[in-house]
Image 1: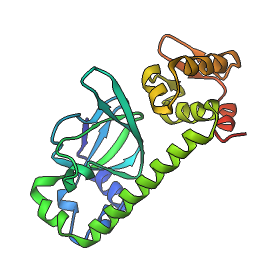
Image 2: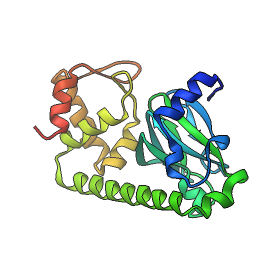
Image 3: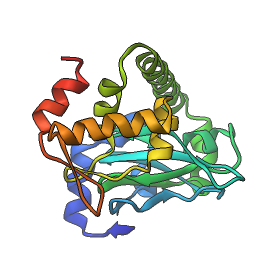
Image 4: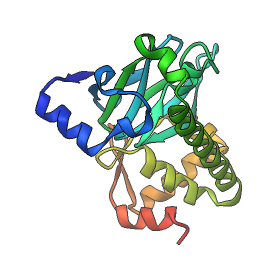
Length: 221
């Protein structure tokens, strides 16, 4: 994590992404701007985060670890969105893990100094309710898509969502569970993508060779 301290850069973010529109009090004195590298944790799983994040740019994934060592992908986060809102509202005491897929830039609001203001700000809470509702609708849509489209469509979408610099690196077990298919079926479709030269298997993962065709598949064409 890198804290952005240059005043000109901060002012540019404040002008382009006026988070103050979400609050009835002056939030700027509480704000910091931070950057996370790809694959860096934004929220550490199991910890009290102590901060509310607002993702300005980038993509991240939300995950949950199980006692048996397995990891489940829960959701994917695309800017702009809040991160850590469920902990702020008390819906859960500790955080699920959030890891950056691409480099991410976030506003950071320390909760303790302004918790009472946040939880008593009707304007902010209305925005937060809208955000949580939209996220729930998005989850419902994703579930419906997983039930209605063939695996090649869903896998193409998943690869585009989780890749960075045209490299796809997700673990097969986690991808199969998220997509609701068997490990064997997932490998079969991946192998077909490689055979069709949409992907190239490398030591680092799968490189997207034919981005345009993969996008058409993801769109159901």
